[in-house]
Image (cartoon, rainbow, N blue to C red; front, top):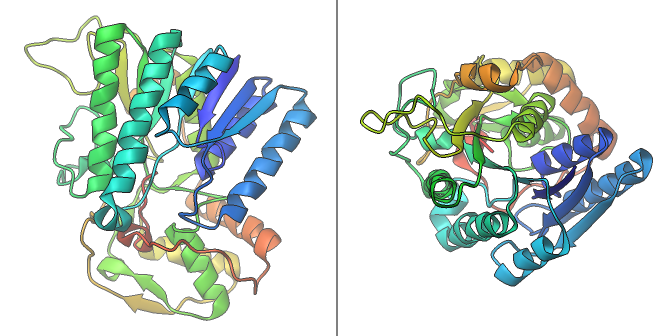
Length: 361
């Protein structure tokens, strides 16, 4: 197949694009390579994608452009006929969304609208897109289920991602565009984002600096290893959404629809306390962390826990990577890429929840 992957220079997009090419698909990447964190890490990922295309003998093209640029998005759809679109580009971050909401409007709302319209006009067979566990917001019923309401976000980033789900439903209903939204739960692993907790904690421990631990370390997170995420994304993309024949408009289920629309959690289904996560990192590094215990931050939620039974039933998704294995793999990559003393790039804007071990997408 020929597949458009937006956000292909990003953490999840890079891994998804590389796996698609490994199985023989052609990929067109789309990314603006912004400076939310050090672009050199993104450029290194892009170089690996080019090498992966050559290694696997598949076609690979990449377009450096902004999804909020309607002409650029229209141009990539005009130049190619896509069998699938996997939309992973977005402006992430909780604290930054408080300080610069306009960036989230442009990337997460305008950009997503442009992707939706490109898929609709070309008749793409299936759009799979990234949502986030942050949409559950003020809901405290665990584990989080797609059948729960997700209409009380507690920060603007989550509001834009919930809006994406509603926009997708409108296009599924009006135009019959099959769409699948995936609510990511705290993704981590090699080539991860520098604004995520694991990256920051590793850098500080190696530098002998304290790690900021919000909510005094009492968070739990459904940490999900990147390989498990990639498998779930590709499995979902391979099976286009279809109308739910049992959907009842008098008792509407948020997870599905009479339109070809569906929402899935994609997580590890096994929450871990933040302090246990840090202990696993200490063991992998062979060094102890200095804790700076801090209170809960605005926009953060204490706990996340994914019910993934719907995704398992639909596509056979079964996360299999224990947290200790995933952290050890990350540390091995980090030391290979940066060494023990290198100054790893860290984002200019830090997310409160990411210091606490969050950051859902």
